[in-house]
Image 1: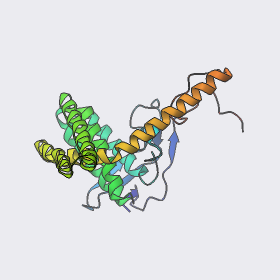
Image 2: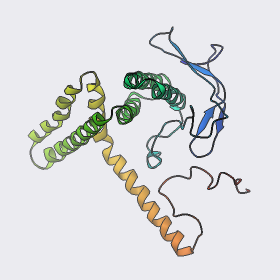
Image 3: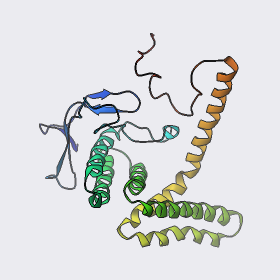
Image 4: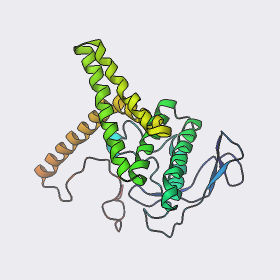
Amino acid sequence: MPFIDRHGNALLGLPLVYRLGRDFQVAETFCWRDPRDSDRVLTIPAHDLTLPPGEGNSTDFASVPPFLWGLIASFGKQTLPAILHDELANRARLAPADERLELRRTADEDFRVALIDSGVHQLRARVMWAAVGMERYVRHAGRLAALLIAQLGIGVLAIVSSVALGIVAHPLWLLLGLAPAIAALVWGKNAKLVLAASYLGALYAPLVAAAFTGSRAEQLLAISVWAGTGTSGPLPKAEPTLRWPDRGTTPPPR
C-alpha cells in the first residue's frame, strides 16, 4: 500500500472536513511512498482549516464534471490519489512560472501511478491521467493549450470519422484513424499524452455525449415541473445537488 500515515504505517483511514460545495480539507497529515522508488516519500500535510472553503490546499477529490459522475465517480479508489494530485498541483501553481508545467507533468504521472497502485484499472487510470494532462496545458501553457485542444478535437473527429466511413464506405478509410498518432509525434515527450487523449477521447465520446444529453433532458424536465408547480427558488441546474442553498442555513430536519 503506497499510502501511509506520518508514522510509516499503512493508512487505514483519513479524517476529512467537509467545507460545503465540493470542498473538503484533510484534517490529518499522511504520506505517499512511490512504488517506483521506495526512498521517495511525499507528504500531504493537514490542510489549513482557517482558510475559507476553496482556498489553500483544499480538495474536491477527482474533479469530474457532475454530468459524468455516472461514468467516473469523484471519489472511491481514486480518492487518495486525487488528494495527492491536488496537493502536488497546488505546489506547482505556487512555483515560479517557468517551473510550473514540468512540476505538473511530474504530478500527473505520480497521479497515474498512484491510481494503478490503489486498484484503479489501467484504462481508467489512463483516462484520468489524460484528463489532468490536458488540464495541465490549459492552466500553465497559455496559447500552446489552444493548439493542443484544437489538435485533440481534430484527432477525435478523424478517429470517429474513420470508423464510420470504414463501415459505410470503404475499409481504407480506417487508415484515417492513424493520422492522430502521426500528428502526436510533433509534441515530443508529450506525444503519449496527445496520443492517449485522442484515442481515449474518441472511445469515450459517445458515452460523454449521451451523459451530457441525458443531464440536459433531466434539466428540461425539472424546469417544466419547477415552472408548472410555481416552486420558489432558483432555476434547476443539470447537476447533482452539491451543497445546501445557503451556507448560513442548516440542513432540513429528517
